[in-house]
Length: 100
Image (cartoon, rainbow, N blue to C red; front, side, top):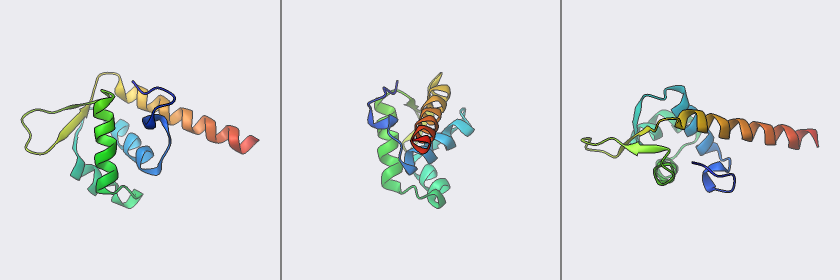
């Protein structure tokens, strides 16, 4: 899904907030507007929410929810665990840098 060198594997505040938000409720559906509204306090702009959602769609981590007026996505099977592993890798890398 997300390879180590992909943009989705690189930590950014917006990606970190979106991934954590999605894995907190993996069965939920989200529109870009909802992600922006719910994560605005974490610094997620509408543009960054849109960019991350499109990248997640391309990587098949989320899929479109048909029959919705707005672009709405949900996590695919196994995606929550995969995103959790990405977040853990970020934490490990950060701990390694702090120990150096």
